[in-house]
Image (cartoon, rainbow, N blue to C red; front, side):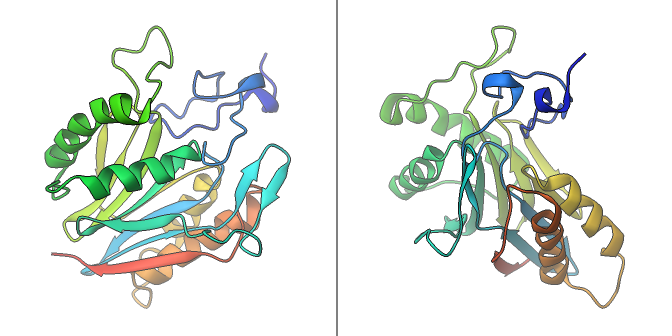
Length: 224
């Protein structure tokens, strides 16, 4: 029987509470960005918001916004906002890759899939990505989970370039269950817009997840 320490904390769609190739020693990923965060996206009444906590975690050590000079986990590129859960290296890699590309389409689920399919070989060739996870996986992995907010909608891209589009909200990271529960409880409140709901989600993650903490960053755009 697996103990709590063996549960998988990755952001793959399977969400299985089993030992997973995404996890590190003991079945649990322990590096910054491998699920150790709370990042949310929300769409409501013509407004789209993406928000995230500020903590970085290295084993048993945490780096807070007090000492991290670049603690904002969200960045803009090609008319969209991005936030990553995965290895700490992914942040600079994806920023660099997106900055070098002239035309990328993030306007729909099929377009985002094609974009990340084209980016995957560059991740291997130019940034030395190791694409192997499990020998039973049907495709190479890009080793990252990305939340993406654009005027066209809210999306998540998982490690094998699976793309999900969401109607209301979603969250990734070790605080995601708390964030999703909190956002579900308040989403129907007519007094709350997308930004307010996103902030409630991140606050819930930071309140109950030891790998997430305030302050948060939040970015808002208008939906098309």
